[in-house]
Image 1 (cartoon, rainbow, N blue to C red):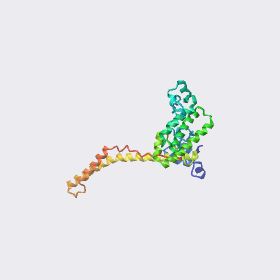
Image 2: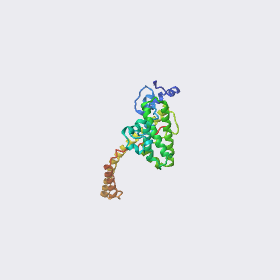
Image 3: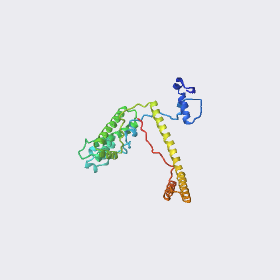
Image 4: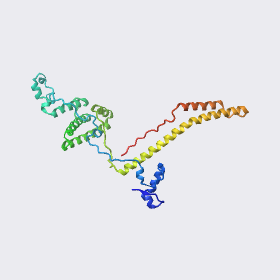
Length: 294
């Protein structure tokens, strides 16, 4: 809705026409007689899309799938059986993971990953082992959920496992940070803790934050441009200063006056001019400030 500019009154202040005139005068938009001040702020806000719980941006899994399953290997129960090494191919196929099911192949992968992070041979309850077990189960369920997204039961299991792993990762980080960093590299995951306080996203509040950011960026850009302009003027200033000091020194010597300028002063002025002339004074960039919104 647009409003016409009127003399200062309570209705005009409530309508926003005075605010729009102030914004136009500051933005250099001329004397437009009718517009709404919201249209002058070129900031668009879109409600952020919800991130699924199994998305790598939220769960932290850099590898979403388990990869190639060892279906031709014997199951974990018969992995140490020496008679299978010399047995017939049909017998090996009967005791293989491909014949017994996908779950047996996942157990082999789980054992290999757990053996890489366990503290000793009998370790089954440390945080590293629990996190490794959760990670294998999470990746296995992610493959299942990707194939069957309507399976609500496994969806709930997957969400619970991700939350349990985040809990143990948070506790491990507090107990032993070096082990925490090493375990993240071994399992190829990123710890992404959720926010401590869940704040609802409001359009008006978000626009206020974006407008504050826009104002600060505009101030920084204008101050940086002014600084670069003044830095360039330094070169001409010291050049004129050196020339004026030379002229003053010559005139004082010519008319026998008391010396107020020395050769050292003239030399310092020319050195300063040459030093500034070699620099790129117009290429200053303000430090970037990162804004974090709740």
